[in-house]
Length: 396
Image 1 (cartoon, helix red, strand yellow):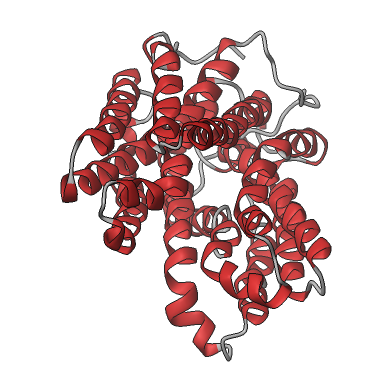
Image 2: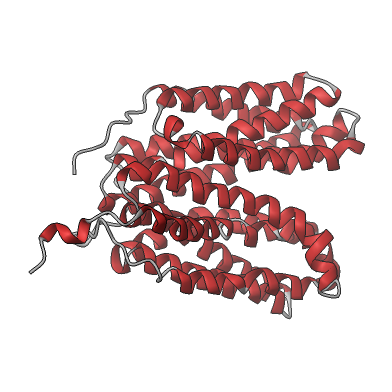
């Protein structure tokens, strides 16, 4: 009879490569289905005669679903495990994303967008919950950096390749383009069952509701709201900010550098994952720099303002990775799913609502800078939490 420790024998290092590939591909599909919508929005709007509000909802509705779907993801992890949840979530994402391409009317389009957002939302807590099952403790930080690199690369790939590369290959059909981006995720879902490792199988059925008594749930979630509200908010209001500054003609370059900075953030964090992940000082520095760079966008002129926006995206993207990587490092594998889900619930609710509140204020005052000031005000309010994060691993 084999030793009880046999199931916990570390896999040969070479086998970590396919796991890394699967984590990266899963990360890519955290963002591609969401961010193919903005470049395709004008074509979808013309075809289905969408209002400006509904056109905007193609992007904002999935972001809202990232918050709403966190709890179903946590429940699925507790009931069927993180790998099955991730595979199921990928299938739901494919059905919703491809369904948008087949939608005959506006109602079906919005319904499929919500389904797609639900699938992506379920993937979010499943990935960090899967890490302790597949990787040894010393590789957790690297694993988080790998799938977050995939996620941020997915942002750039979805936004940057859709119009110049993929759509012309598909006879300029927005419907075929959506289906083409979606279907490969099915292969990723199947491939998830290839690795034969589970280093931390829970002995009991884990809880799934967020543990609001654990201060990490709110602290990490509120800080995620800092990163998310600044990034999504400035992405949304960049055009109006530049127009008010008299440099609207620089919008394409500004958006390019703003979004590609997230790719550099992921590559930088991947390089320094072991040194940076789990360090409170790095979280504090990136949070402070995110706020200062956002202030710079409003007080600087010309290219300096755009450079400040690029810096904000770079450090806010780094902060996002550092925060998302914390749950598998700080709690047991049984608790990782619900801690991640709780932080995503809080973080993405704020990432959606804070820019919306700022936009409402700007509508009243007629000054788009007031929207940015709301985001800065929120960030300053929660910044002290970064100094009080307890990053010691909790007892299991």
